[in-house]
Length: 275
Image 1: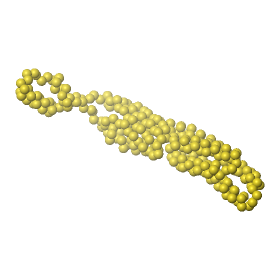
Image 2: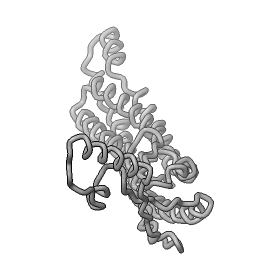
Image 3: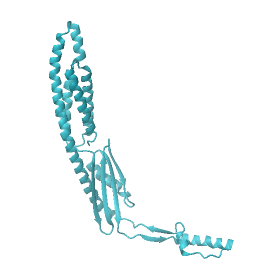
Image 4: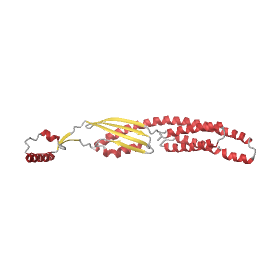
């Protein structure tokens, strides 16, 4: 079953003693697999492990991974006493030098740069990773489910397009024979008939289109990442359709050729979103 490259998955998980962790995964079209991370402090060292989980489930797409932690751990206040001592020494010297009588208040000291800060509790990777791994797995499961659902819709659409294209190609194959016979009756000389056949024979283009359609249908039924292959086949179909349209002399065939080119364009638009 083919999968789309567009999807979303999310989960929330309570970690005792740490708080609530939430994971969101969003994926969009991309030529290759690319992962972009937005992680809170303490999680950065786990980026490669998260990437490995994503790589194991997805083959193509741009994946944005957002991890948030609503911590229940209390931050600790830290006072840089060494810096306070330096400030006090400098301020006392300043008071003495300029004969300043004002006292130095605690409130003023606390406001000075670097004196007061909050220490974030350090997160244990050993403790955090098992919980985060489960959360990433749950979000990935949701993401893959959505990509499969959209892939099924894409498969149904592409199957209908292929069926319509097969009918159009079959019509052109039959019509070209009768149109060619009628036209040749109006050409008097052997040389002119030979030249006309050389310029307008679309047998090869029809056979190639039939082959590409069979190949496209076979790839569509496969599991795995086939988006690039389907796009290549669609390009080849478009090339044959353009040649066929340029060589035809019959109005009915020209009309179907335009229809074929339009259908192939629709196919090419949709395969861009297949993994």
